[in-house]
Amino acid sequence: MKADKFKSSKRQRIKRKDLNITSLIDILTILLVFLLKNVSMDAAKNKPPKSMLLPPTATNEQLIEDGRTVVIKVYPDQILYGMDAVYVGSLDDLMNNPSTRKALEGHLLLDKESIIDNDNNAVPCILLQVDKSVQCSYVTELFKVSGKAGYVNIYFSTLYESNLADKYRGSSS
Image 1 (tube, rainbow, N blue to C red):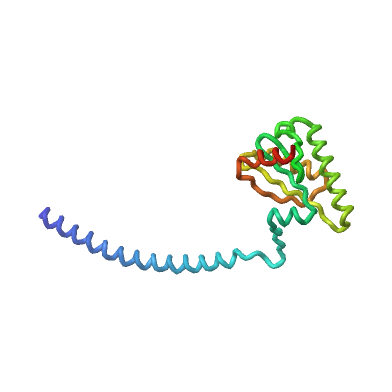
Image 2 (spheres, rainbow, N blue to C red; image 1 turned 45 degrees about the vertical axis):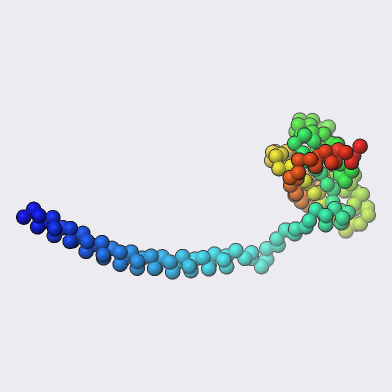
């Protein structure tokens, strides 16, 4: 008798598995339909609203040749200002020495006035080129100094070549 019970329970298990696979396929089909519908809905959601103004993009060359851009290059060991790559100080000087921040702010104000004198409609901007290893706190401090000088447009670029600092040191001397 025990053998009969075992065989009958084994047959019941097999029958239940067949029913579960059928219902599983039905559920997977429904899920597939919903997933396909949601994917197509997500593509429609990625379009910005008509009233939204996206920030403009430009290459470094376009910004520099425009004549309204002040370039600041930030390396792990130094900050270089302008197209002439004038040494402003180190990152530690920027954070700890108020005279370094004041000197940088003074340079920014002079260049801003010069840009506006050449064209009254000009909006001066800053191209901040930062080495990828520089910490965010230094960039934040540069924002503060730029804001005090009245700059509202700041563009970013990352410096990847490690020998760029040597190139600019050589050209400034």
